[in-house]
Length: 466
Figure (spheres, one colour):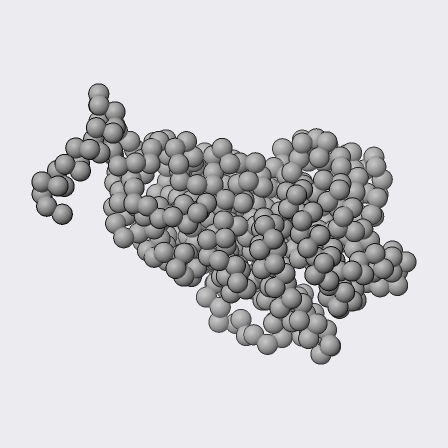
C-alpha cells in the first residue's frame, strides 16, 4: 500500500469516529482477527475496553493506557465450560480452589458448576472472582443437587414428598443459586416431575439427569431446560422406550441393563420426532463426549503419565479409584457395551447438532470423574465434537454462545461487541481451521485482568500440587 493511500485510509477511518475528541480507553486490542461465532466470518478490527466492558469494536483513532498488538492473532469470547463439579468434601477444598487457575490458564472465563457439596466455599469464590480479588472464571452454580432419599452424591437435597420439594427449592432460593440441577439416583418419578415444574414456576433454569422411570417426553413437557448427558436422549430416541420404562418401574431391569436394549431399539423416525421436540421446546443437551470416551477406556489406557495429574493432588486422585476399579472389574461384555455406547453417543451428538438441537460443551471435570481434568478437558470436548463430524464453528458455539443463551446471560456474554463483558481469549492460530488451535492461547482477558502467555504459564506452575 502506498504512503498516500495509507494516509487516505486513516483519514476515512478517523472521520467515521467522533470528531470532537480522540477516544480514550483502558485497553486496546489492535489488529485483531475477530471470529464471529454466528457465521464464522473473520474480520480485522480493534477492540476497546474500559472498566471490564467492551466499549467499541471498530478502527477509530484512540488513546489507551495499554495496548495489545494482536496482529496475526485470532480473537473470540472467553470459553465456557458448561458442566463442571466443585465437590469432594472439606478435605478437597484446596484442590477445588486450585482448579480455578486451570480454567483461566486454558482460556475458560466462565464455568457452570452442575452441583456439589462445597456450596458455601463456591459462593465465596464466586464473589471474590466477581470483585477480581481472586483469579478464576465467573461461576454459575446449582449449589446442591436435588435427589431422592439416600442419594448418590454428598450434600444433595433429598426429597420424598411434595413438601420436601418445596423446602428444597426454598433452600436453593435462599442460597441464591443460578440454576437448579436434578439428579436421578433415588428420586421418584413423581417428585422428579414436580421438582421441574415447581422450579420453573419460580423462574429457575433447570437441568439434570432423568430417571429411567420416566420418559423423555414427560421430562420435556414438565419444562426441563437442559439434559445432562446422552443416556436420556438415547432413551427418547428408542422405539421401545415405553416398554423399557415399564420394566424399570417394575424392577425387572436396571439402568445399565437398559442400555443395550435402548441402543438396539433406536429408530430414526422416533429420533427425528424427539429432535424436533427438543428443538421446538428450546431444550439444550450436554453431550459430555470426552469423559464418556475416557471412562469407557479406563481398562485400556494408562493415565499415569498424564500431564495434568500434577495439578490434581493426591487426595483428589484417590477419588478416581472408584470408577477405575469398576472398569477393571467389569465383565468383557460390560466393557464392550460401554465402548459401543461411546461410539453411539458420538453419532447421536452429530445427529442432534444436524437437527438444530442446541448443544452445550461441558467437560464434567471434577473429583470422582477419573482423568477428566479441569481446564484442558473443555478443549478435548470440543475436539471430540469435531472428530464426530460437528464443524469447528458449531463446536465453538456450544461453549460460549450456547452457554450464555442457556443461562439467559446474552446481554453480557456470547460475542465480541459493544457492551459485553470483556472476557476474551486471543489465540495464536485459527480454531476454525483446526479445532486444536483453541489450545494455542496467546492472552486471556478476564474483565480488567490481562494474562499474557508467560503469566498463564506461571498460573500453571503455581497450580502444581503435592
